[in-house]
Image 1 (tube, one colour):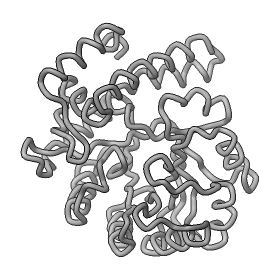
Image 2: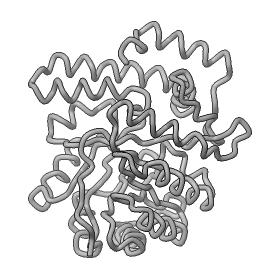
Image 3: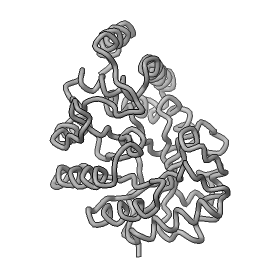
Image 4: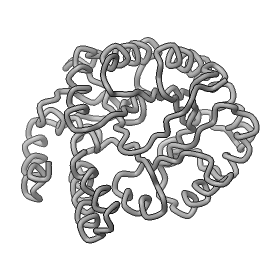
Length: 305
């Protein structure tokens, strides 16, 4: 029987996996990452996802990362969602089982993306297999077709999976299709939790009823989104739009030189060194880091924090 479920409401930060300069895992940095989130009012972290470069980590590294985050979060108000998805379902089940033992508030899994599920039946079978390894932990399917190449109708997924995955809690919806988002939100009378996952579209999702968001840029720009949500909640759309446009400008600058490498460089600028990106993602050169800082300063980014 699944334990009582705390929805993924508010800002859920998709954290970076920290590496040493030689590319090896740097678990000592997790304590500083967690303190940084807590100091900025973040109370939930999504670890080992896309931002966490999970598909570039070994199974042992992913286990060690989850273990360290659980140790650091213990005794604090920080709750953990563990991404367990993998091309290898044996690995995904092992990660799901570990996450439950560690007390994660939820697990999430994206679709296998090398051998892709050809239809909803195959995708739901994958999710059923993974979720069964954590029978007391809420399960969120992680829909991110831009990275997995698996683009199936999520409203139909919810209908089929609700019959076969007892722990199904909802979707991490990282998709700009806001028509599909509305269909998912209203599925089964609004039973499912559908946190939104595209930071630069957050205001649109809020307008359509989103209660939570899972995002990578919350690592370094949480105040922008906190002000955005507060403005939306009090009906101040002009301010909410301004904050959303700040997010758009920031993300556009980061994407120009490779989003993940730029995001990790920005974390170092803010005093939380999470090291380089791991190939096939690329890190910034010192010259590129200088240009990144200048571009961010030019739009006023550091004053937004």
